[in-house]
Length: 144
Length: 282
Ligand code: SF4
Image (cartoon, rainbow over all chains, first blue to last red; front, side):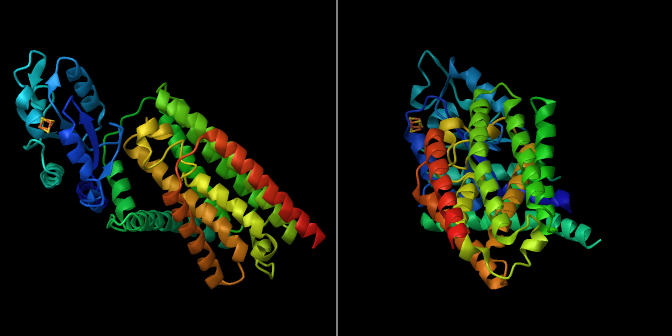
């Protein structure tokens, strides 16, 4: 019974961490908009934490380049399992308008495994919330 | 026999109550910010989720210190329920507070180092005030034992109104609420990530959270001593104190530890002196 409660709780309290991999700030502002009273994701137990060791879901915006790939990898490795990764915006998905720059590697999934892709330039807050909910389905899948 | 039952009752009931208070806290805070807020049981979901995560620790001390913190906090609440000695309870809870700081200091991370040092200063700030409150209770009732204090026929609030405010300071610091939330806080992660708790993760963070619920109940229990004669008055006092706490949390900005030391000690000591002199003259 206790195990079941833990598994249910996983979907009810996703703590998110937001990492900006060199985005234009458009997507970042949309992520933060989710936390404002208008969208109020805290209703679903979402807390914005600044610490990978406490986070369950990693929201990544922007493109990966040669510099920050190491940082992204490091942050991902510091999150304890089970964890989910959401790539946000055209940049996070594929590199977006920056994909042909000489320093850009491409989307987030070039460096770490991504669970959910949220498209848009910038992604809408509704879409981001939807992405987090979809990522929770991964935790539900862990029930097994 | 009765004492043991009371201790066990205290240890079992306190975390449930503490968790509910934490949930209510988050809901009321959300309403004050015109949001809807998480469900009432959210703190329990959070802790249950933390227990389901991987155990990632930097060293053995973190495990040990988080457990000692939980046990000391639980024991102090158990002793409070059993009507034991106030001084004994004070020392037991101080052990918990110090071990939490040691757990934070055991890792080389600068965030947790700075956070722990600040927590140490916070402990140094509220501990003398707490002792003064206990001493003033002794001066009124003539006893440190809670069962004898409960036999006193008048509410302590009548004779110790300023000491209650001083206890309120200790409560605010202990709950890590604004303007005293600089060692670790729910929302202050821009500054120190999570301060002292940065390096704790998964189940050990959950343990600390439960210990924190115990501490909330501990201080609210001490508040309850100030109006022990009627149950309604007691509940009213606790509810209004906690609500005032929430309002303060939501209207104040975070200050520096220097400010806290100066402000809390000067005001706290001044109020204690006024109250004690008044007690003697009256
Ligand atoms: S997807 Fe668009 S809005 Fe988002 S970071 Fe890239 S360029 Fe900016």
